[in-house]
Image (cartoon, rainbow, N blue to C red; front, top):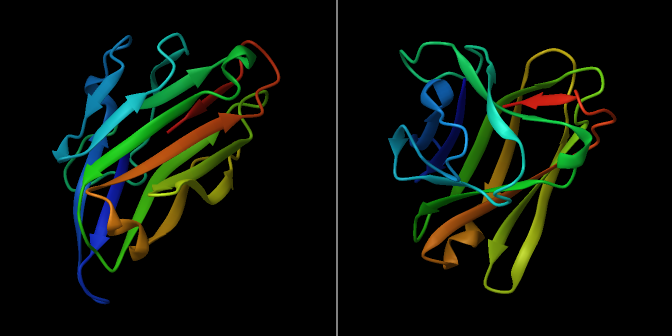
Length: 167
């Protein structure tokens, strides 16, 4: 499974600037450096139960093998966040994509925000389904006024201690 971010330098040409393959995810590591590119994923709450769960090849990049997904479990983790950062100064647009699914009592929604010089601004929401699907978020080039792109993902909606979400 992969979480990927692509920047578009022109309307027709994009490149993968950061991608995470969670097959080697180590539970307890608060910071995960991207497998491809210069991205950094930070689990913001050290005590939230993020860890590896069985994943998918959906949204995988190139020859990455399917395997683990970044997962979270339990109603106590509602409101947990992770932050994705990538050094960038200008771009026309960017896209964040990731595969996602939930269990029957798992997390129903994910909220995505991006950071500007005036603070966090809502980018959008995605509803997690019981089957794997790909979420896509277009990031406006205007956020390139900072020296890095920062995205915050907030998960919510679990209704039991066994409810999960996978990315």
